[in-house]
Image 1: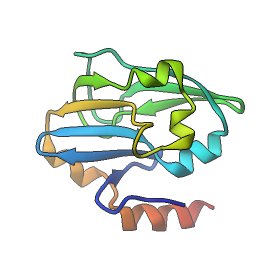
Image 2: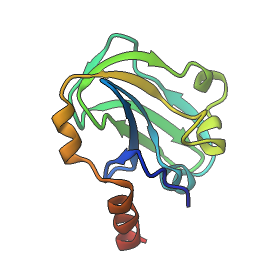
Image 3: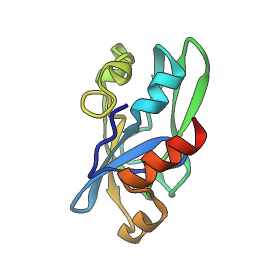
Image 4: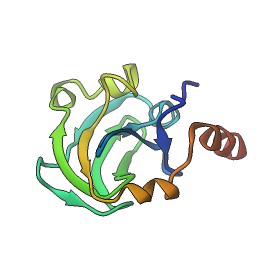
Length: 128
């Protein structure tokens, strides 16, 4: 199961890739494989602001609907419009083409509440 080393993760299986004061958010490969074939993604709107751990999107699959929570606080600066027509991009490419949104980060110290890739691997081992 792919886990990207320089990304940070949540216990709800979201990831964030931080570059300067901006983050790209998606769900982990573990999450997409657990959900099965994703059939719909509800995206946040550009300029919406979210607190850390607030629901900001949702995905529906053949198995279930799941809320997606923002790993960090900030303002949405871009959403992945490709997911409207091709929600299965999350299944095919959870870390590259299947990202959900980009966010301008409000507080970089919130990274302390997230897991490193190694921490996330250990977390997955504890729940599988």
